[in-house]
Image 1 (tube, rainbow, N blue to C red):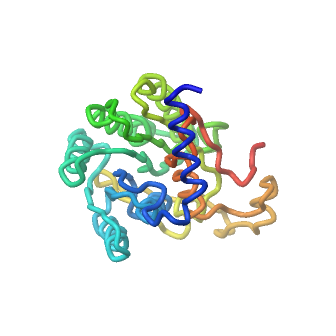
Image 2 (image 1 turned 135 degrees about the horizontal axis):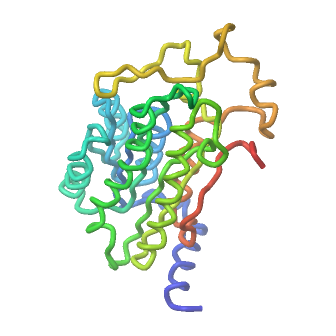
Length: 295
């Protein structure tokens, strides 16, 4: 066994044998950027990462919600700052990265989670509607990763990991989501490329493809959840048709072995897994978090 491999195994064994006596947590001493962290999966990830010892940069379009998550972290004794903004703003990635380093001195983890849906049947989807999904889910993560290159491509022994959020829509396509499915497929290609280019620097890059997680994107569109992008109000959620309410769980989850939706805390757990020492030899992988749907 090589010296590097032996060191990796030693780190993992230390976590396995003494994690209960390590109050610092799995991510102790690391700095994590989480986009779309004001609520949902991103918010749950930010809270969990802080609980596991990371200093967290809470980034979201909604400054009020981002500050609330950061407040929860600091009130619990953790470290967090807020860097709010629109990930599609060309100046934002540089500001996000530089404010992170100014506050915490380094970057270990990037979670590219920010995003939303803008559904419509293909023949009715506008160019703007299609392009916006590519900007949010492909171009924005690319720019953030590129901006962080000088702080990530270092051979200094620090653990570094990137997780890009995809979806089962990107793996299988989905009715009414030509734009979103295309974008979520594209992020997998970016992930694999980063894994190959930055692997020699010890940087791991993986994707999580979520299935039905209970968030505002999977609840009934008739609930009225919206967000505003460039002055345009976008309705979020799944249209329920004439009944305007979700069918019973037995119908919704008929093809899901666990017979239920995933919770944001469970989704966050899968992201933590890929950033933890237990995934130290996993890179370029797409982890499906679906309750078994699609197997």
